[in-house]
Image (tube, protein in one colour):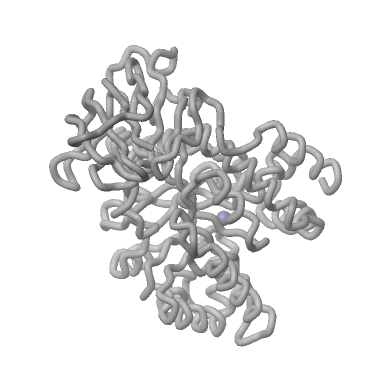
Amino acid sequence: MNIAIKNILTVLPGETPEAPQTVKKTDLYIQGSRIAAIGEAPADFTAEKTIDGTDKLLIPGLINAHTHSYMAFMRNCADDLSFMDWLFGRIDPIEQKMTDEDAYWGACLAILEMMKSGTTCFNDMQMNIMQTTRAAKESGMRAVISRGLVGSGDDEAGRSRLKQAYAERDAFRDCDRLTFRLGPHAPYTCDEAFLKILAKEAEQENMGIHMHLSESVTEIENCRKDYGCTPIELAERTGLFNRPFIAAHCVQVTDSDMDIMAKHGVSVVTNPASNMKLGNGFAPVPEMMAKGINVCIGTDGAASNNALNLIHEMSLVTLIHKGTHRSPQCVSAEDAFRMATINGAKALSLEAETGSIEVGKKADLAILDLKCPSMWPVNNPIAALSYSATGDEVETVIIDGNITMENKKVLTLDEERIYFETARIMERIG
Ligand SMILES: [Zn+2]
């Protein structure tokens, strides 16, 4: 569809990649799935739909760089517990009783929440193949999917999970909004031999990697005991860092770990709410930025966060580090905005397609209402996104040139049905 968005305050990239983003009032034209022009309409352009941008803000759709969508129905059911009690005492037993259909409805609920708070792309690790992928495809979302891989050596179970990952990728080849990565779950659920196999497989299949790394002190201690090195050193020596690599958490890292990640171009996803809620701490984001590491933001799953709202995470990532470093400059609102947009796109090898508002890129956009108490008056919209927005200001979402949410109504999902099904799941297995 040809869409014109008129007279709208728009966040645009600066002159150079390093220059600050700029905000200016302009018109934007969408043809098919892409941004066709900014400012002047393209020749022969006839709008089939025109959106009035008065008192609205247009931003690139946000990118949630680490989540587990299927867990959305587990929100607020395992709180204020230690990491091990949370995982093995509460979450694991629910997962054991979960069906594929449950995972699908969980993913639908997650996508609903993400879309309503301006997310247009998410990076997911899941256990029930086809389900999150099906929900992403139906909802119109852009997604990068990893089947969580667990195994040791060349064991049958690990091999069969890898086969499932390939089967899922092959089943969705027709949808170009979906890409796939290999997802070794963590150093404590995959042994070194299995990680080496996955590094080779990723090379052969030309796939990137999505993995949890260095989340908790226990993980570091056990890794040192088992392998005599940190989880990041382990990932490097197994060859995994030779592939495009997105590392979730990286809370407990040494200076040399950060040098290793910088050397290999590893992207780090910080998940501030989840890491703090589980009492794990948080990633040393300013130090990583100083070393040139690409840092992006994730929510993690709703079982540990318990929300999937990137605007909330942008606020946390700025405030935590300002507070702990006693430096109001160390993570700026501009930094947080980049982490939630273009840095996420880079981490997912999607920077040519999404993450900023530029002619030729996919039209992945969110429109926010500015005429509301949290955003008014319009002094600095980028600061507002980190410091005063709640996510509720998002009115309209466009993904791949399609309007998926309009005036706060999600058009691609049956919202009432999702509430009904997910409540029923928790009545049955919670
Ligand atoms: Zn996770």
